[in-house]
Length: 546
Image (cartoon, rainbow, N blue to C red; front, side):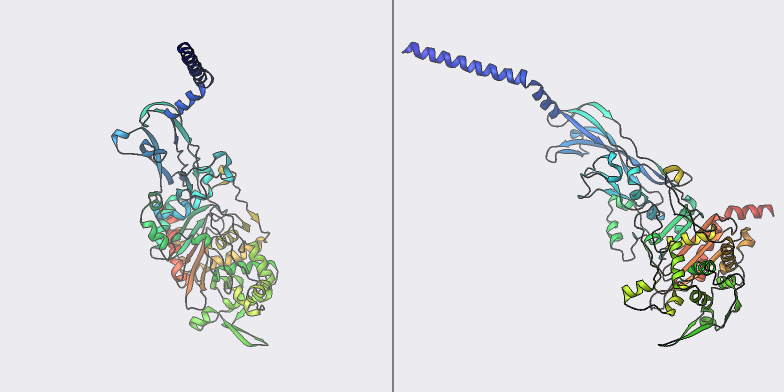
């Protein structure tokens, strides 16, 4: 009996050793590589090194948006499951470079640059369809949040790098195993004239409105919307961002491309062009202004007055198209609007781009509204009357434009009849084509309209702030004033648009002051300050040679 028990115990011991041997063989030979990988995984960490964004530069190379380098000490937080920053020396793991976005011009160019912020929950883990090669966004990635930062986000984003490090069981750093350096995003050079951009922002203190300066082919030299904001506050996470978001003056709103306003009399050069192109008037056409125009309908008699008659009781007498533009004679435009007809006025307004987006390389642009009989019937349930055509012919009624759209239309007048897509980034650097479209306007008609605008900035015209500009600068300019009524209230938007030199323009400028009053008195002086600044070197050179 005892012998059987001993045999049983011996057998059990042998079986136990066999099981242990098989298990050891499995662990060391069959699954040795697998468990080695697991062990390495527990002691090897992958740290993502965020790639810096590309810089946004002005045309002269000045910085509009850049990265400010930071240094971070990291340690592995097991509760959170990822590396976090620390100031505690006993938990230091490794040091890597990081960055934060900076905007040197602060609120002077915020609507151009925009700003960056962390991705939200809807954006994390997804790929931008425009740059699939950049991969999915992680929860700690930054993204452009308006302006050029948003529009060119794919190009500005870099390719992240990574660092492989060996750590102790508690996550403390042992050694660096290897590093793949991040690749910075592409720098973008814009058409912005840095000194001009900085200067124009100083002219709108306490004023709501917009200013746009470009060359005749659409290269934006300066753009400012007031009130503005400091994009650095959003990057830094300042509590002041709450004030910006809750400000009823809407400082985040870019009035240059997203605001819609009645243009008033700066629309008149386009109406004159439509009348000339449809051949209802020509250079020899004259209109006898008596101060008002009256017509009869089945609903009664109606009278529409000229601003000069309303304010001063005066009349212009016999005037041609150039005099009418120079003096902004409402009655003249009522009449040629009637002769041209609503369909032709609408058609030419559309050709000048007033009813669609310009395609500027900024997000947030909206379309304007050029009303017509069909629109009025469908939207208002009303018929179109001659009085509606009269209102439209002087830039009033239901007509609404964005400052960038009317600016582009006036630029087409300045450059001889080509409607160019406004842009901040030049095509030769990006493949972005400004795409200037020839509107097919007869050269003689363009010259006639430009002559009227030249007279507007000469003695006797409405742009009195520029009467002595040629004398002091040696540069002849062309301009148009605008005073647009706002609703039924006794308030008006002040407009002023000007370009120079007349024959070969190098700068086109459009000013809007919301509810500012008369264009000649409010927007005109601002425009003069801008032109004085732009031509200051030329003026100094002229004075030195006298």
